[in-house]
Length: 162
Image (cartoon, rainbow, N blue to C red; front, side, top):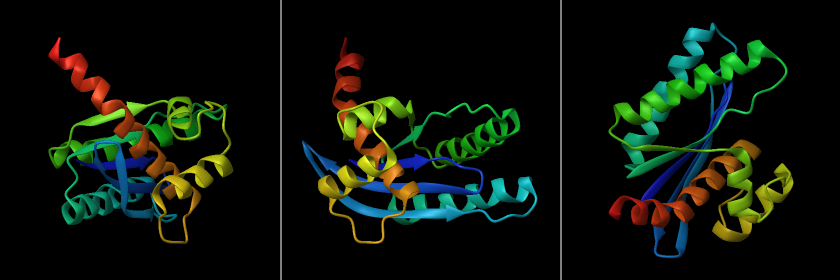
């Protein structure tokens, strides 16, 4: 199964793709989509269009996205939520089911600690997947989301059988 992981952001979004075969995970691709500093509606369109191109190129079977971290700045949270919505809409537009995971669950799945910092996540992604360098923080986070989803898929499949 090919899994697309997405770390949403309104100015840059991390994208990571892994292949999962049983317990084995293989790095396929990672990058950071940069939407620029233009008008917000244009940035959302860039995120949608670039993610669409990545999906069409790598043909993932499923997608996972990190839940929004709510900050104290309401405007920033609103923009992040809108960017996340555009990225989810893109995945659904391409026929992908989308799972969402809170940041603590992603960190728990990759590092073993729900409160791990970004450096720890980046290190464990390198250990687990051996991606080519450089590995930007946002791309590492997206790969971590994909890893988290790979760990949860068997549980979801068992849940659907009952």
